[in-house]
Image (cartoon, helix red, strand yellow):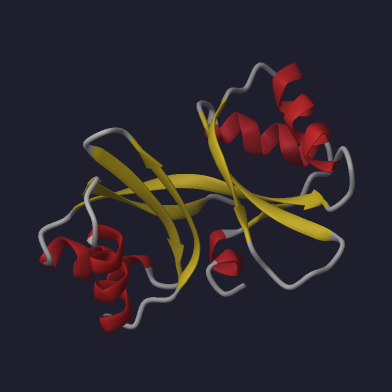
Length: 143
């Protein structure tokens, strides 16, 4: 039920994100979701893509530092309190959310959130126990 995310470490300067997206475009890799966190000098670009191996190879060949991490994609009821229910369920199980970001898809009654947890396997178990849909990586990459 885990998905892979590519994290790319970048200098915080003009043009670096454009360089990354250009490399991925040239490699034929489609970006499905992203998150960017920065500090004064550096940033971490986190990506869900349709071909992790191709993206990792292209970025490393271009000299970027790349890391693959496991995350979980979760369906969230698209209504007031939908995200709170999931976060409260995890809080009661003492599972920490390290970070999260949204995944855009066609409109409907569910939203998708990408989560990184301190206890990944336990988080999956808790979510499934509470009938919260965890989306497999293979499905996520094609959404």
